[in-house]
Image (cartoon, rainbow, N blue to C red; front, side):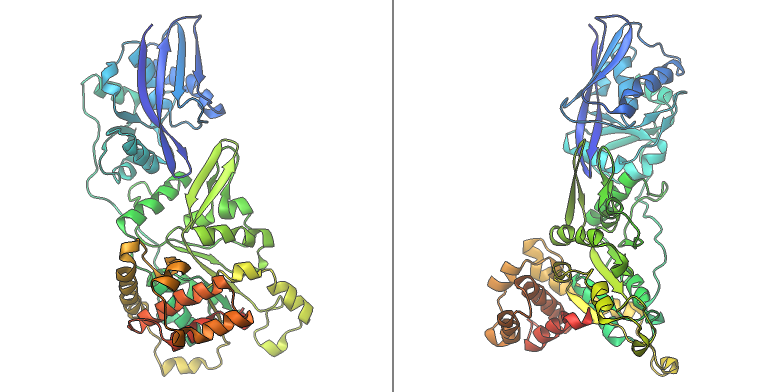
Length: 504
């Protein structure tokens, strides 16, 4: 019985598994069956593939066609297997040399007339193919710029199934690598010079950028909380090559990449609305879970405006991601893992009525307490910096002192980040926020004189053990900004001041 093999890729979150597709012809009445836990969309592929082959001037076998996808116990879905299924069937029918499919990953959905349509997840799919030892790939033409981001794989692109078959038979060549990597055009980041006043909040923003710390801004409406948050990405350094591929892979799975310039090189800024569902925030969906807002903000900023308007269930869902830097979602078809290493910036009014002036507030103490209690203690304990914004009382003062621009602040942030990167290089960390508490307490322990105030806070219960570790991280960031060799007592005192619950 004729037998042939082809290769494609199954995605589970950002992780991929190479799938071997075996085609067997004969042994029963004419029909087509797919085995290997296909979902409904994959089961329908046999009709799409049959029509695409016929309309590409090829003959569909008039016998039993069995298509087996391995690993057989792995749930598989989507339309990205179409091209590999078609080539496997034609190879089994001796219409294509079977040996040319060895080491070749085939990704793409087939239209009934044989056109190859783009699919999501080409970048993570080819990364998985490379890990599995596949060194050649054919993708839809629209996905070629994205596929070209993967090194170590010889990528070709085709418009139709007929083009692929001609190439497999030694005919005309397919389109190759488009050239240099094309970075996506990021939205223009507003400049920090636009923010009037708010010296405490501006300083907190600089510290957050320098150390990768989470930030809470509390204050009346119109004081610049959102303006400050939207300017944070401008203070962050460009993504490294590895980080850019991670972020681009997530957006590839979500289908939100620009076709001509897919590579994302700047820190993402994601601002979900307070009505966003829990799956929309952390990821979810039927079958295999899709990435949510926190994964879209990977290596960037997640801004939650009016955070006290978010439901408690949505806020508490953030806690694991804040601690572990990734989210794991168990669904019917398996467990999807998505990275979620982001900086959280929250902004809230101090009460529901949100007056411009504090003495105009009409809320009772109970209403204020209930409003702010949506931010639970465990969630706030994971926020390193808390600061209040003040009402602007004299707009004319902006003409006397010109605020610092993003470029001026970013220069200091870059220096502080370089100091931190040199310190943590041998550990594989990039920012102070990534340094675990045990390392800070043992290998980078500070003298008792410097930590006396922090020790007192632990003794009185004013700060938790987790909070103490986060104070140490902020203190190291403050010392980096001051170009000091290590934190002093003043840096620890300032870090504790940032954690004052009265600023929440």
